[in-house]
Image (cartoon, rainbow, N blue to C red; front, side):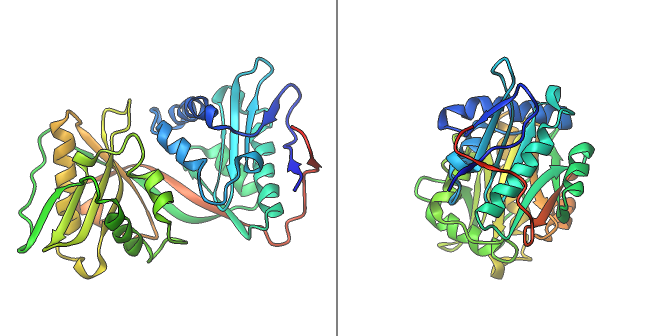
Length: 315
């Protein structure tokens, strides 16, 4: 299938992503995060994991944009999901519009029925651009924070239950637990390799701060932690409780174990993301977390979308 080239402003050039580009992409993404959030949040492992998503072919599904001096100033990727990042110093020049159009056309070419993209609500210009291209809100996501000036208290576990940190070999059973718990709202189950690349195989995975709950010998809950460099705070990537053990305080117990573990290593706050489909916001608020930021997941249905870019064999 011929490649697609975004229609870039004069002086900019593009090419597909390679594995060696991950550090430069990470620097670009964190510059964008500082512009919106006032701090960086992503780590190199998350960037690398996105490039190994099942079904994503870097040669055709990714684009890096360099300015006339050869500096990386924008990037995009798309399969079912998509991302577009433009360096703050290069916004307002048409790069975001060109890359967004490219993601839509590439998804249409690949036969994708719809594409989704997540944007911080504070990035009003980017939100307006998505809405102008026919994207509609799908779900709301919140970044929640738990302040820890003092060591958090940890409640006693329910009778017959134990909690311990994640150990080597816990990956497969934890994967099944998480996928079963998330089946109620997620679009598809992740294979172990995909899930592990985003969680337990990431360089920032923190097993000693990840809490697992067992009823007897059966895993019934998990809070999976990351130690993201440069943030000086804890982060929980996934929290899951088996359906038949909900309503017993297990999620609160797991959160408190992880909060305490982070506090003992010097962190004075811990964060996590949740979204409206999970129905978990009230739980986190009751635990004492507060909303720091919100984002919206937007969806664009591609049925009937006319082609807008010409195929090319070069970039």
